[in-house]
Image (cartoon, rainbow, N blue to C red; front, top):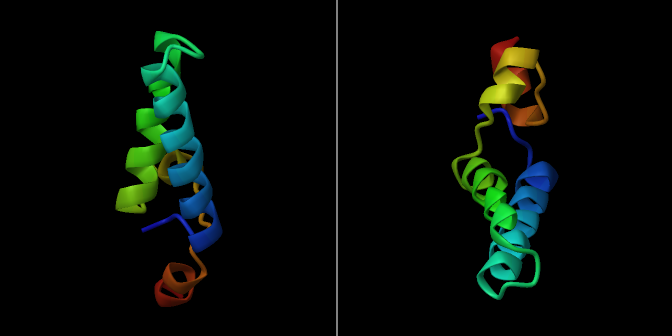
Length: 65
């Protein structure tokens, strides 16, 4: 887990909104990219954060020390 609570909920909301807008043809097929932030928000892990060494989950950060 490397995604904090605020980061998680923002990813879930933005991902869901993008998917809904794609499904209703408001933004087009490219908006299905919302699957990525939605999935990373649900599983609380972002592979890009791991590569860059970013940690927004304070609980996990204290466990590592």
